[in-house]
Image (tube, rainbow, N blue to C red; front, side, top):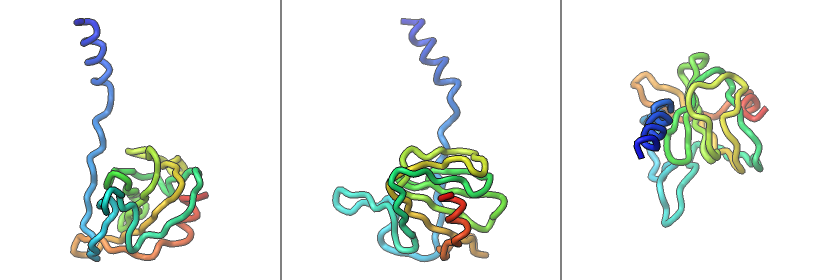
Length: 140
C-alpha cells in the first residue's frame, strides 16, 4: 500500500500545474457567449466569431505565444509579437495549452470558431474583423 501511494505521489509531483482559465472583459455585450448553455447544448461561437469547417484538420500558432483556456470549449492565443491582440479559438479538441512556438499545432477539430480581439485604452477588449493573413497562418 505504501509503495502504491509513493508511486502515485511521485507521478503527480512531476506534472506541471494546470494553466488557469483566462477571463477577459469584452467591450461589446451580447446575451449569449461561448461557454453558455442553451437547453442541454453549449454555445461554442457568438456574434463576432467566424466559423471555418476544418473536418479534423489542425490549426497552428501564427507566432510564438501562449495558449490559455478561456472556457470549456475555447482557448485564447496571445503573443508578444502582436500585444494589442488576442485570438479566441473555439471548437478544438484537446488544444495544446501553454507556451507554443510559431507553426506548432494548437489543436484540431471539425470546426474552428475564431474571433480577433483588440485591447482598448480602458483595458477592455473589442472584437474586430480578423485579418486574412492571420487566418492563413493559423490554417496553413
